[in-house]
Image (cartoon, rainbow, N blue to C red; front, side):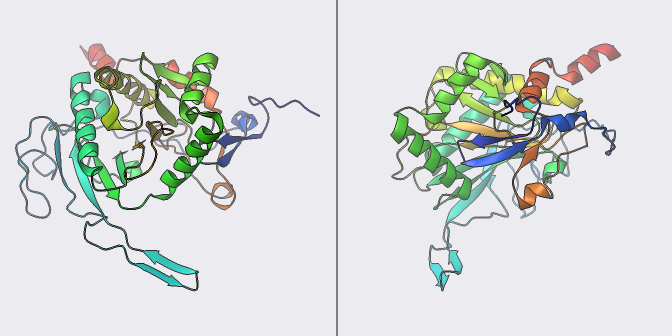
Length: 352
């Protein structure tokens, strides 16, 4: 029997958080590339855009005026996907046509009053204000809702309709699919091993050092062994903590520092404002046991080979299972080697 070489031969990798598998085909990176290559349209943004509905003191689509905020700002989404009074009735026709009412709320978080910044370009102190807002929102909304989904869609390629630096919070009375999978697998692992799945995984990554992109005393960023997207990353604490609202002062400080470092690396990969969808997965509220759950954040960027050449989930991926060519180890090494100084700062120095 041929010995498996995960750097050279096709194989499947298991995701212990979801219980799903992904096909990895590292030999395909040797094939000639005849895909699409493009140059990013680089335009400097205004610090303040009078037409932006998220900028301070501007009027939003519903006619409400934003305050003249100076750091972060949160408000109820004017086009909320979840509503607090929609009811939780159920519909069931022969166990084939099922529906269930869900209650919740949707909020928008402005990271900065500056229209031209992203988290990668903000200071660690400014990022810390965003973290504090995540924490405060978690504390407040966790008193009423079971699931608190904090996320950011960055870049037009991810469907972001406004370039102003912002994220969202969607909360719900029921657990969504991804949360259910992670709760089940982390819970079963804890029952069997009496340790947390992601803390044990973080220890493996620390020992192997093959997939670590950045780390400090409290956190690590890795391209997970089971990554689906080419430059997907997982942000993990080194000590078990269940929710953002449980973070210590030092964990908050170090979280701000590591976010700054690896988001700059993302931008430096293709010298663009790197697009992604990111989101925090924290322990559910209301009766769920958080002893086994480890707080973590997923970053899912779509780009593959350049600023605009992206990875598509088509064909085999849609009909069978996810697949990738570049291994997690190769992607991590590429990101790790990138500078921690933002490419725009280097560009400005060169122009002087």
